[in-house]
Length: 171
Image (cartoon, rainbow, N blue to C red; front, side, top):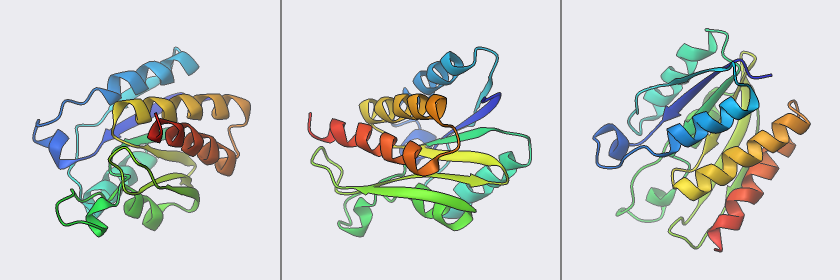
C-alpha cells in the first residue's frame, strides 16, 4: 500500500511558469483513489538538470516515502534536434535506481522518443510519466491498475504504463 507519495514535476517551462502544471492535481487524485489516507506531497517544479533531479529524488528516499512520481522529462528530442528542449528525467533515474525496468517509445504526436522507467531506490518505488496531460493520465492510471494487481512486478508495471502511453501516440 502506498502511504506516502511525492510528485516531482520537472521542466524549465514549469519552473518559469510558462506552462501550467495540470498533471500534479490529476496524479494526486489517482493516488488518493488508491488510498484515501495517503499523504501526497507535490514538490515545486525543478529544472531539467540531471543533478537537480537526482538530488531531489535522493532527498525523499530517506523519508520513508513509498512512491515518487516524476512528471515530464521523459523525452529525448534534444538528441535529435537542437530546437527541442532538453529532458533529463530518464538519465537521472538510470543513474540512481538500484533496480529498474524501462521501455522506449517512438511516437507521432510530437514526441520523437520517450523513455518510461519504473524502479526502486532504498525501498522507494520511482516512476516517471510524460508531461502531456493525456499521456500522464494514461500512465498513472495504468500504474494504479498494475500496482493494485501486483505491486512488486516492476517489469509488468512498466510494460502496462508504456502500452497505455503508446495508445495515446496514435489517437
